[in-house]
Image (cartoon, rainbow over all chains, first blue to last red; front, side):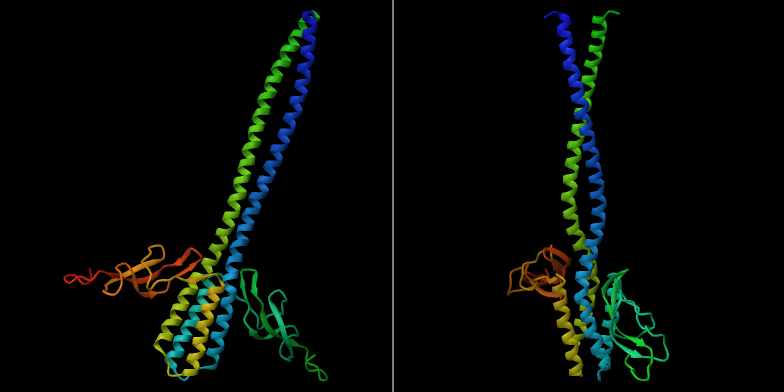
Length: 169
Length: 169
């Protein structure tokens, strides 16, 4: 082969190599972009999931303790013939409420509010002439929430329209 | 220019292009590898951090409630002249202990154990002839842990060697 033929062959090989490299480079760039996007998504999801895990940990810790407060309140409601001991338990109760608030939990508003299925659980209805139907008139068990998230619903009695024939609606 | 000169010039340009492309491709490949490694690290860290966030949520919820239990126990220790009311409070206390265990918390072992600075806080030492020096002989405040993680240390009194001249060591 003469020199110009070798040149031509090498030239063709270089041209192929350029085309191959350009394609490989393009693929690698696409790959990097996809990885960057995945990375960003994971980072965003991570932050969200960490918040969720923190709330879940708090929720798991608080739920069983709410029943303890219920028991304490039932006992306090009965009263005692020993005023000193009773006062010690009333103080324990106040500290309990404060500790739950410190832990981020707050009682759900109920009596006087409109019934809200997101926060209230209707245990019964009762006819009422004094309030609008659908208003919570009594709380049977206190509900608790952490921010907008429900720990447990308030169990409530809801006002029904007063009716002569069907007082319980 | 004759054809062979144009060929030679184009050939040189292609050669430069190939070198440039090869370098760019190499850089992109390195970049993808780094991103993949970062991605894997983030994923591993994410799993760890989620566990940590769950524990942190639980810890933040439980800590203020441990003081409530302390108050309840102090009042129970004093006793009451109203046995029915007292029994209601004793039941509240049992339920409280159960709820804390349900929430994942466990009391720290102390009396009879060797003093362990990871779980015990020495409030005082007391000479003892009956137990090895360094043994916990009394618990002033119960400690709590979640698994191997300490919520709060037990405050304890630790046995010291009995000495004639310096009984408190």
